[in-house]
Length: 312
Image 1 (cartoon, helix red, strand yellow):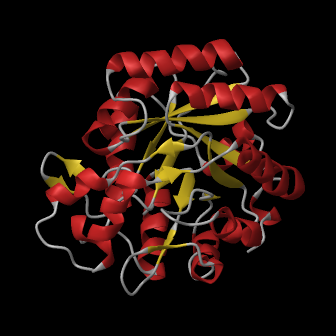
Image 2 (tube, one colour):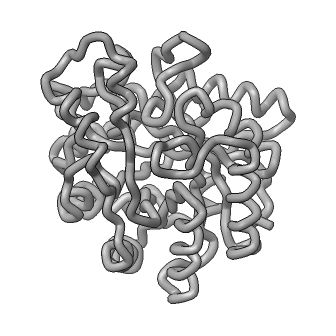
Image 3 (cartoon, helix red, strand yellow):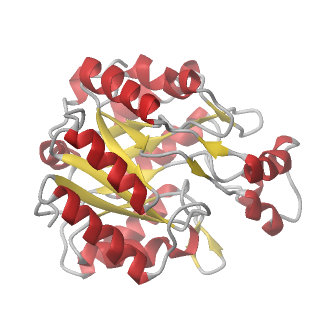
């Protein structure tokens, strides 16, 4: 069984690199929009903020540390949430580019994908009538021939450079069962130590699906591999977000929501902000008699280094 969860940790993934601006006018693009969305999510109950950056001119994902620095200090100043910076970056970025912002910022947490995978986003194009920017259609189509690289060498480098050197803890993103076994390898090697945070991800083309049995299988496998050494969290992509996180929370998990993973508040209704998605999730959890973890409670559970030990 995963470590006992006293309160639910809500992670909010604010903008990401999956969706393109043409899908929603509410997707945060500029540093100001990202900061406001992140702070709004924290005010609505998110303990952890998972952050990417985008080019403010055209909304394209960017690894530029200077762009991250246009919103990280403001978020830190205006809320107490744990800041979690991507190491996944975006399609076509090198490992060095993907790590640049995290190496500079030295945050409390970073995301870390636990295996190379096909990451199919091309189906999004079929749902867009008109593209706002020239890069979007080509970027989506390019995912037909794209492998999101995360080799054992890559993962080892990240764990040592960010984890051992800078005290960063990780949101271990597991898109399929094999990723759990990869994580178990690094636990056995001593590069990952408890308590660790496992984000099981459902509904991305190239990863595991969204059936109830998929959720149960990932949980059973993680329990068998890690016992009570880990904290479990659930991410459902698109329309599966609220259903899966609710089910996972009932089973004892933490949850992740946000516009990186899902742009809809309800059927056919675009979410106008990340705060709306967090508020809806928090309300559902509270109506199920669950308590929401504060950022400091999340820090204690995950044994994070603290907001005063980051590099921004």
